[in-house]
Length: 197
Image 1 (cartoon, rainbow, N blue to C red):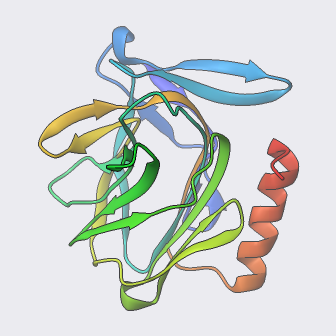
Image 2 (image 1 turned 120 degrees about the vertical axis):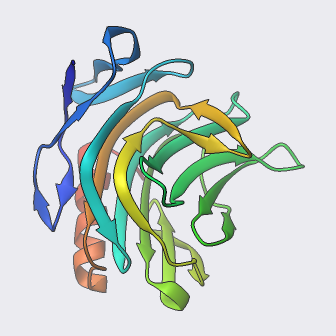
């Protein structure tokens, strides 16, 4: 099995867990863009997964990624096991990509822009929040679920397997929600590193 090593936040610490794939043909490619490192997913075959990563709500998810406007559906993360916990980008009826969070229900969030995005989601039942590039994009209920193994770059949307098509720079899971100051500091650090306005 091939291993993809990347920086990931887990349990509040930078852990650097490996994500394994089932073979060489499914391994995403590491890329460098202007001194920024990321992982390029090809939209058809590439993904990374790790059955050992688990997290229950309340929790937070940080994903820094480049948005591909041309694709109708893009899965950022999904749960590897039996729990429903998918975060994806899907075109709405007006042809605009929205963030879709599927746990014990579905939540649709606007605010994802073309190009590089910093996404921070607090999964905290009725007090859940979504921040896109530091701006509050959603506040309300996100159904309770858990991650029982993590898949990055592949998941299920409406009974179809969908792969991510572009670059993911960071994926972080924090087994709690952050204080507002900590979230702002984390977002500002990501904005500085990835030069997001």
